[in-house]
Image (cartoon, rainbow over all chains, first blue to last red; front, side, top):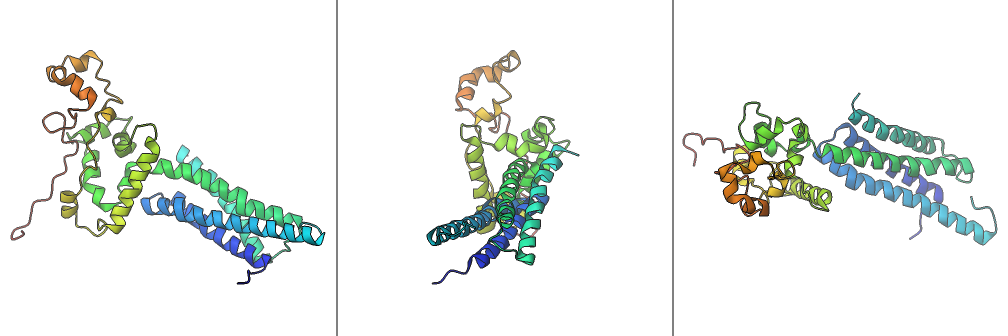
Length: 73
Length: 213
């Protein structure tokens, strides 16, 4: 399976981060059991995944550039 | 402005900043080769959301201590109403009128005060959420809920002894206390037992309607 390009992956990370942020903000504005539970589990998991995706893009981009002898970004 | 509002604001500000960066990237699609873009994304995907999550957790944990949070599940309403009854004589009502317990009345009495108490209390709360949504309490009639809901394990005297040390003369001079003092301290005789100071809540099942059951 071919991975999407770096730009697509970062866009996906941005969308995931926005979803995670919405969950976290929901729990702050409406601190009832369901929003708090969703924010502390699903929201943070999605947010962490988005950061990992971005770090993955950075690391693979850097290692590819190193292999080609070019700049890292 | 309350401390609660300040904490909420401290969580919302980085969320708004992060959202601004993320929407900017999605709309403008700047080059990933530009160092400024990478730094902006580090803030939008890392620093600011982590800030929101950290302060949001603090806000969330504080929210879970409030009576209103427990009241978020409808089956808890009779217990909350009992605790908030200004003329109630149950242990819950008497203690909820205390300014040091007040709006955190449920947590003050039902939290686990052991070494890992905060985590154990949250674990128990998560179990309650599971029971509410997956084991039928969400759609349950109040009468049925009142007859089914019971405390998960015996109420520990150590919770009462957080405030009532059992060491002062006012306590030990009571003849009933003197007779069971060691048992009370060891948890063998419950403070909240019927006949002593219990039942802790004055919640009773609603009377059955005529022709029912």
